[in-house]
Length: 163
Length: 243
Image (cartoon, rainbow over all chains, first blue to last red; front, side, top):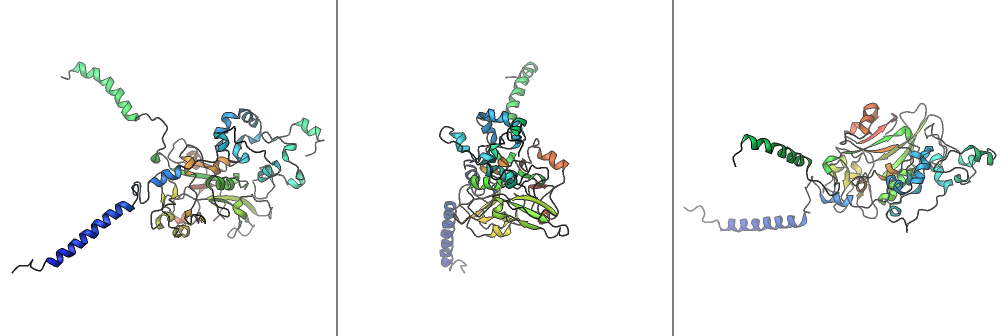
């Protein structure tokens, strides 16, 4: 009695399964990115790809490297805490190539109002004005110097002390 | 070579110097960013927020956020004297243009900036069927847009509503905590432009970060602590009505 006498069909089945396994392993190796599973169940290379994006905002430390006069001026007023790009906008391109990319002059009537327009939800100690009454749409830098916004006494006398 | 007592004594100082170098590691040509040396978080000081919308505009510009979608946004809360349970919340255009219209000055009024909480146990990464979103070893929740199918599971899973499907790429998108900036030693775009310092990036693994003293000395909250997400955006001075 030979227990292996009708084994031929089993061998064929095993061969088919073996081929399927090899195909699966080869396909998997080809399809799954190499860095998948490097840190966890995701593509590890994605981290460095996301990190490679160039920044649009240079950061105030870069601005202060060149514009030391503005830094000195800001130190005299309350706007010392306001970073450059909060008003001037994203200027990494200017920082990379100061000659060809120049920042635009700001419309102070719009820019200043973003922070200083009166609103009951703003902190009570934050300086706020209703711009319509305060200046009637006049550009803020007519009277205020944005880097050092507090108005000196001489200027006030020149405008008749009018706000 | 026989190790005599004299030779051993001569070798010891040299070995000590060598060991110092081994411990210090190989000197690097450039200060490389190490994933394992950071654990990023953010601190939001609600009493300092003036609702100017600088963060929302900066985020959109820095990250090419499509019009009408927000990776960060500001909410204005109005809590009537007897309605602490049901505050009125509004966020016109995500607060991008500020909040020009004044509202009812009665009751409590304040701004709450919101963004991805970069949860350590984030529900959004757990539901992703393909491993397209994940928490990095430095604690930032990111989306691999080349892997994302756009199935929207994560958009539904986020308890804070911080995700959306980008209409151009049809993949999930969210705040990356300006990962391309913080890995270069910069702060996030929103923190960079915040004029009052209401938003501050924090590195919980850096013992010298001022966040540690702040957390020690202030009553700081996270959003929806009952969700057990281990959110890492800390809110100081948060009113009980904030959801």
